[in-house]
Length: 330
Ligand code: MTE
Image 1 (cartoon, helix red, strand yellow):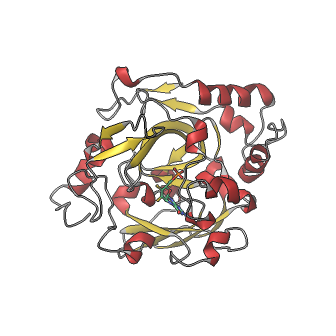
Image 2 (cartoon, rainbow, N blue to C red):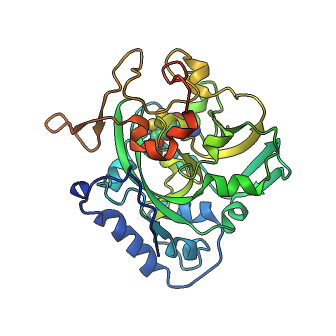
Image 3 (cartoon, helix red, strand yellow):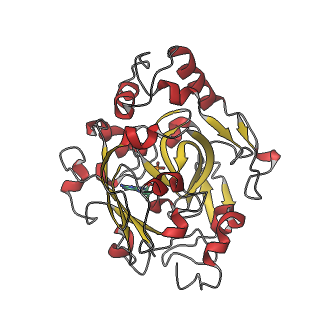
């Protein structure tokens, strides 16, 4: 099924090219798992795939991934190759090198996985991720990901709208912000043994940002479950913000009344703000944000493109910031 919700942010036809890599992957999922089963065991499926095993027909997530609802988000974008999106990563819990997350994240056990929901909401407690996702139909959304380091990719995510999940916890009128936290477990995430960042990784959104239809909670990409290096088993995807807002491997969601502290704004407040909206007219103090390197691209073919306001999602999100000085609230 195709949901038609074409927006100005969708790219032009001229950018459409072959998406065979991930379509083949989805085809693989369909043909390998012929049995319709219930939803569950996200981490189990994740582990199976990451070990290079074909999906077992008894894997209970299979039916959800077989029935992913396509959307028109980003249908015109040229999708980045799967091997680039899964080997050039930022996930400092596994090291600071771009290939560290791929090389070192097999220690992360993604099942069972629970999320603690806390704070200003009617329904709080510890919930199994499977139960949270169970109630939803998975969607595919192709979003541009623009890192604050001035590189970008285009990734077909699989998941659910963040609002649809948050609303189930019935936030109260005191919930002005939502805070997210990544797992803290240095045994599984050896990068946390080192300094650099103040662990656990923390992020936050204003409640209206979190409820914006563009905000997405991903459990998969390229038609399959999330690889560990991309934030398994569940992560945020906020395509109008710099990539560091899209927190990975979430274990805590807290509804709060005041603006929460976030990892990068605590570390270097003059370089990384709470909002972190993609904005080519506000440079990082140490480099320009006017352009980006769309991956893959190398020395001979750097593939540099102009960065767009809100990463091209202006129509969807600009109203969230009406009247705000975005040079001050960067
Ligand atoms: N989440 C956690 N927990 N730890 C991280 O180091 N890095 C962020 C974000 N989420 C990060 C994180 C940054 S800087 C970016 S650009 C994106 O993840 C990268 O996502 P990707 O590796 O899937 O492309």
